[in-house]
Length: 250
Image (cartoon, rainbow, N blue to C red; front, side, top):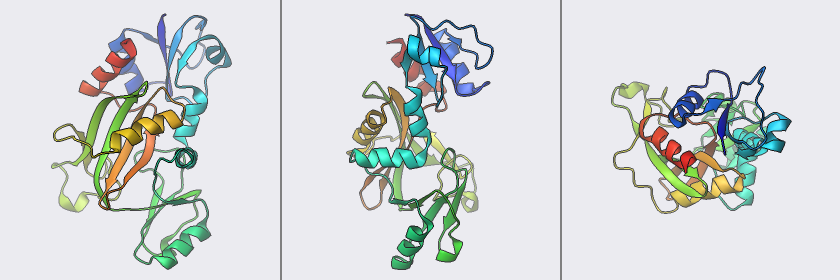
């Protein structure tokens, strides 16, 4: 069965890298003459696909599942319904306010955007006065380790650990939002996730109805495993790209 890839946006670097490594073509998002019947389509992060593609081809990662994974509020609801732990969260400003009143030392992430990445749209409130109106609020917990676990067809195909970049000065490191801008990178050395981390990742991908996904999972200092999000179009390079090529080829 011939395979194609449908990118979530024109010019996606990760979609291009995967297509080149697999030796397959990308489907144009506009003006495409693609004939889907009898084809396999890798849906790379798209919450909507042309109806003809969904109905007439074998799609890896159904667009409805991708849309659910892209929306953090929906993701948390689905995961919690499947007994997969996530950060404590609220959808109402008053609930967040009451929580901070009960726990004055708590820190709340006000997520002003539900479909975002790399910490975009997060406002950190350390007092009630700093709370802003948002569609989602999550309670921050102290993190011991954070991982990205790559899952394909119910199995872990790769694992990475978020590590402090030594190229970033101490005063510029953001220990609450661990992303590239905050001074963190993905590392492979000493990547031995604690018990339950990989199981939670596999469970999260299955609960959302996905065929594959890159799951951000934390091990808190209180010894809890929590899923933060599931990425359906993660960055690809080096070893990780090779693992995805091996998985899709198989």
